[in-house]
Length: 99
Image (cartoon, rainbow, N blue to C red; front, side):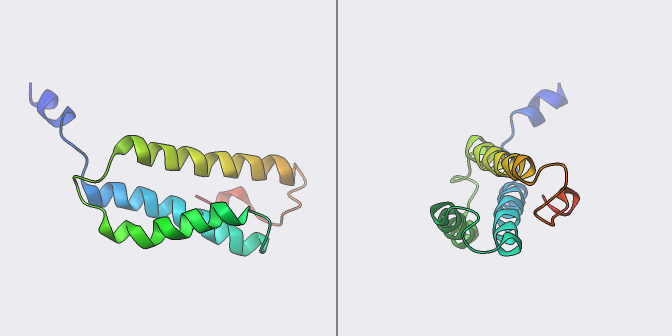
């Protein structure tokens, strides 16, 4: 019975904020390491805007579905990078260092 109550509670906005910050920081750091132009500028701009707006997140404005989309997009970018770099790790990044 007690687990049913907790299951329906909305996650704490701080927890959700940390998840978003992790994705944003990963993408922006990756952009720095790869060098300008390796990741499309419109993607970088969106993540920069997202970083600026994170501080305004409230419990009411946070939707876990949206955060899942951000995490999915970040993981997709990392997967594409892994394919692009190939087995020889030609991007001089180790995937363990990221996200």
